[in-house]
Length: 215
Image 1: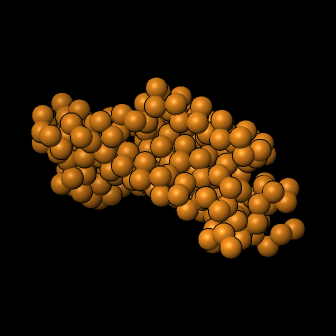
Image 2 (image 1 turned 180 degrees about the vertical axis):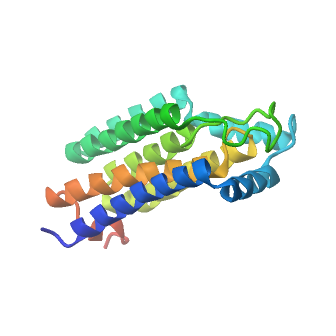
């Protein structure tokens, strides 16, 4: 077994534990909820402000139309670059991560913070964040299908999209910070398993994750 596989499986396990611990904290810790709410409140943009509009616009790129466009681009690039196994794993991670998040949102939704920001404040009580999951998993999928020599550019785009949406849903009042962190770890769980599968299949090596300029 390649040495990278156990590490990737460990990282996947740690992500799963992180998602569970966050859920336990916001269910059972008033102190955690207080800090989560207070920090989120400090980052919220004033309602009707330009900042809120920009945050909503950026976050909206992870809505269904934007995701459809992103997936079409990923599929086309994966086929053009002749990376079928990478494309298969990329789509699998995207689907499983987003499905996991939607199931968790339905199961874990509860009024954990009602009253903290006002009962009428328009923040979703939904853990993890679906928009953040979509952006992070979409960015990972793009990075994965990209040949190693171009992955630096793919990584920059993926990070910009993920950070933009993750910050946007908080500033725009769509989600709490804990929702965003949970979403990142949900994607991390599936992404590490996907990479482990590709390493086991001899389709990836750790060297592919540190692209160097072509000589």
